[in-house]
Length: 303
View 1 (cartoon, one colour):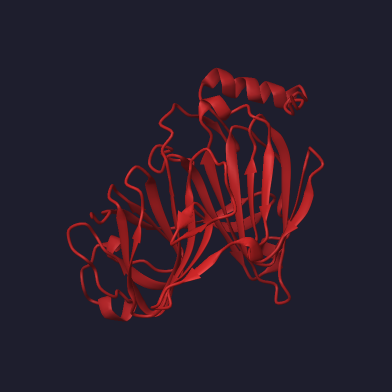
View 2 (cartoon, one colour):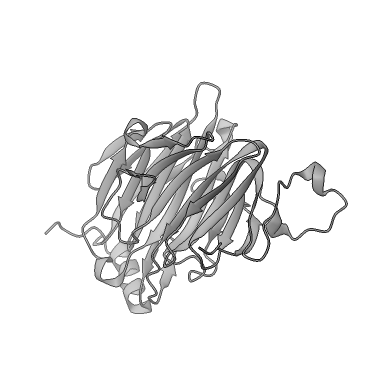
């Protein structure tokens, strides 16, 4: 067994997206090879409706899959194919944009105005770039959750874990998407297939991820004051942890426990030509997609 080394631990950055939604971006539009097959990850968490109600009006997607996971509030969505629906707390939508779709997402807060969710973009391999669009909408009640003897809880959104399999399937990147809660003071190890690229995103509590060379203990702000520590030894709210190669990830939860997403997928290792929500393999394919948008031929007929 080998612990995956922590390559980096970086805070998500405040970003303005859509029609003026304030969110935090953990990665995206920089080095698409770093977390291949994943392209972008956003944390849209707000308590002020003015910061999110303008939402994400009609916009195109081609060549990728988008994964939306809602924790609080609701997201109304619709597309150019006539699909409509609402994602509530705990729900997941996995949209395969494929050959092209026009899509909108409009968030609404809960009774106290809170809105919280995540969106992840996954690349599609060249032979699936122009596949027919499809949706997988999953209610929170249909997502299995397993609790270990020490109180660790894992929601299995996609992939297999601890004898459970998530309801989302048929995804090109063969991903594993887990929502993990580890109780205060508990040290826990999670298996991750060696061939996958993997990252964690901490969004509640705090803790330390073990490195390949030396395990870290509980790392809380009050304990590290005045000490010189590598930032990768700390993981708190809105922190992206990027891992190297290995077959397990170990975390030591802090005094408030820690909750994080652990996401991994098989790298596609193909060239990328990227313009916003359109991701193709070549510049010519990208230019054709933009011409399709201008000529109103972006949406392809179903075969």
